Length: 128
Image (tube, rainbow, N blue to C red; front, side):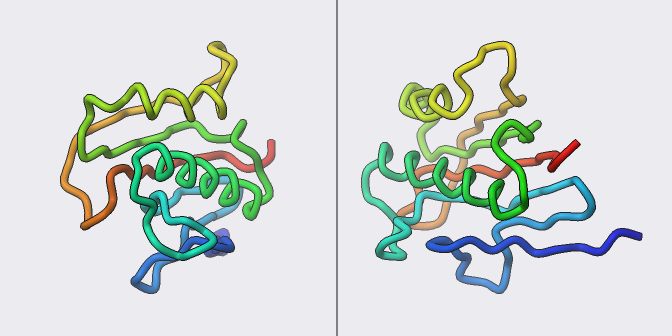
């Protein structure tokens, strides 16, 4: 059985003792990744800032695991207000500009912890 490896990144952490992601072999699965400002450790106020930081943290998780966003196969997003998906799509298109090479994505609306307007979790393959 492969050994599990916890992935931690600079500027992002959970309040509970939970890593940003977990990896076994070449499979990586994240916990909830939200828009915490890495400079302050506090949640950004504006949705656009939370989205920018969230995608920045996703990139950092992938790098820490030895991969890149190209290895992401599933991107699940929960938004407090799903009608604001156009703001999500701005960052989505920056990370995945090639319409022929994007991960699956599901965006749902749900209740989130106070101050959090959006969060995601990812599944990815690292390496070949």
